[in-house]
Image (cartoon, rainbow, N blue to C red; front, side, top):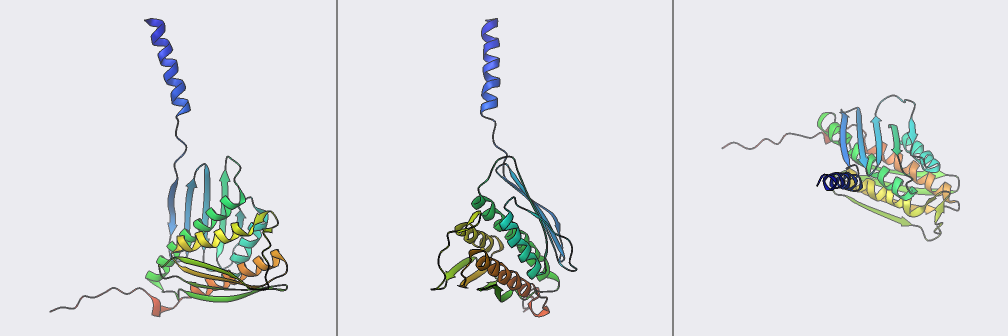
Length: 233
């Protein structure tokens, strides 16, 4: 009896170790104001810390572990005039597609909060359009922050499908914009018009995307949320 009880206890301990659940996903808003948003998000065993501020230019800390993508995010920060601090921490190796898609989602979630905060105070235009140039490459981006999510990416007839941009795939970059649009709740149109070099093409795209966001976040009191006053009898 005694030896059976001891064996049963050890088995229970072994089962507990095997069936221990993976860390659950989580989402926390640590700061939310018309000038700054800070969030932290857990996905599987990874954690993404993101802080975005408006106003004077600050130094940025962007590290997703995908170097060429980090450079694109720096272009986004530069041309959107949004200070972006973004850091990915993970205990396991993640594919660049997984990283880029989830970063798009996190940035969209953070900017959705900023959109709500700005709309309640100063009001913002919510509509942005820009063209991006980088070397021979040319792209256009349009964005509308209306709560209707959707993303359309078109490629000009003379722009070939490169497949990869260094260490990352073009499909991964497309997933960034799709996930961003869904998370921010906006309509996004990305037109790849001209490009003979994959880096130049996508750098031009992120430049256009950044300036389109800058336009969309331009303060405009005509777009400030108004309280609805019900008519009285």
